[in-house]
Structure formats: C-alpha cells, structure tokens
Amino acid sequence: MSTAGENEVRLRKGTSLNERLVLAGIAIVVCLIALPGLAHLANDQWLGIAALFALLFGCLLLGAALFDRNVVWIVTPGEILIGEQRPFGKLRRRSIRDDELSGMRLRRSIGKSVEFTLIFETGSGDTLTSPPLPDITQVQRTIVQIAQLLQLPAPELVENPLDAANARIRLGKPVSSKRVRAYRALLVLLACSLAIPLIFALWSGKLSTFGIAVGSFGGIMAFLLIRHLDRASGCWIVRDGDLRIERLSLKGTIEVITVGGDDAAYIDVESGGRRASHYAIAIRLHSGRKIRSPVLVGKDQARAVQAEITRRLRLDRSGAG
Image (cartoon, rainbow, N blue to C red):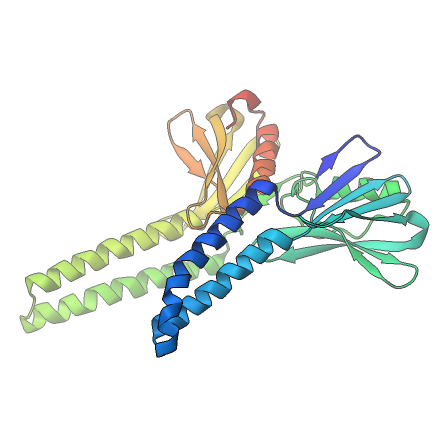
C-alpha cells in the first residue's frame, strides 16, 4: 500500500515487469527442454508423455507472465478509482462513488500467507473485492482511513496478531501444554525406535559394524529433528520496550527468554530457508547470540514486521538491515 497523504489510499495487485520477465524466461526454458522429448511420444514412451506435460506447464507459465492483469485501487474522498490493465491491453478505468456503496467488511484469507482484503457491497447487490492490504502491521489503521474517506461504517475487525495497534504483536503460535506433551511423546517414541533394535542385536549377539553405523546415523538424525522442532516451536511476543520468546527446550519444557532494546545489536530480515517466499526476523544480540523468529511469508510482510519490532524496541534504524 502506498499513501499520498491522509486523503488518498492506493492498493495494488499484480506483478512487476521484472517478475514477468523472470517468469517468462523460466517458461521458455521449460518449453525448450521439453520439445526434444516430444519425439518419443509417437512410440508411447514415458519420456514423451513427461515432455508433453512439461510443455503444457511451460505454456501455462508463459500465459501467466503475458496475460496476468495489474489492478490498482485509488481510494479518495467519496470515490474509488479502479484501473485494470494487461501487458498488451488498454487501461480500463472504473469509478465507484460512495453513494453506490452500501457497506464494507474485512476478510482474512489464509493460503500460503495471511492476506486481508476489503469486500464492498453496492446498492445493486454486487460485490467488489479490493487488492490485498500489503502492510500486515497497519491493517486496522488502513481500514479506518478508508471508511472515513468513503463515509462508511468501519467494518468489524478480524484477528490480526501482527497489527501495530495491538499492545502486543505475536509471531508464531503460543506454546501450549498440548504441544509440550506431544513433544515429550515424540522424544519417547524416537528413543524406543533407536534403542529396541540395538538392545535386540546385543541380546542375540548379532550386532555388526553396519548395525552400529545405522544406529549412529539414526541417533544423529533424531538429534537434528529434535533440534529443528525446538527452534521451530518458538513464539515471539513483542511489547513496548521488550521481546518475550517462548519455545520448547530440548528437555521438553517451556523456555522463556526476554530481550530488551539494549540487548540487541541489530535486526535484519533473512531467508526462512525452506522456500524462497519464506523469511524470518533475525536479531543479533551484543553477546554474539543470534535469535530468529518464526517464519513469515513474503518479504514485504517481513519488512513491515521488522520495522514495527525496531520501533517497539527503540533500535537505531540505521543499524537495522
């Protein structure tokens, strides 16, 4: 979202030219790789069928890059200006006056990421869906501003744990007693899975070098799994002046860490590791320790949360990454 003052709100949906070029390039490469494999299609070989599906997939990607539309909403006092355009099409404009609107409501969509959109109802019974509100920390402020511009009642709020209007913003799911019990049950299950085969092998006298190697490898993998669950189970609660981190310890108990603004050297946004769209907030402490937040989806969302944490911990913005 970009604002040109208190009398205008802009919402956008679509892809930039660079994103379209990258997507089109990937599509062309997929198609070029698939084309030679079509020669096997006449012989009913599986390689020809795979090439056909790859070619269709490449064509779909190319179509998305060429024909996906960009949508811009400009909300001004008493009016919504809507512009839609495809890469090779004309700009289509539409104007909706506030006297044509009978109400609006806020909708929260949960897919690969959490998105908030506004649903407008017109006097004729039609509905209009706005582009997503991109700043996840300013949803409440944005909808109040839009309601004032269009002279409509503000819609009922939807739970947003990352909204800056909250006294506490929360990243991740709270650590509950159920999660602690499930964690301990997993520890017992892994311990039994590794110990029983080794005990049986020792008892029967069939323990070999290969068995020891397999058991050692299983123990290492189990440790890495437990370590990953320990790090991924955290919940960040950011208040004015401090950060409270709750997570499962390796012992299966709830560990609480409190970080103040004076403890932090810098804050940055890093890759979440699992997917390209996953990001995490990383805080480097003066002690040298680095702590990473639960995963956020989308770099814009992560940057917005980073800015809000920076503000609440009163960190120097010049030191934020």
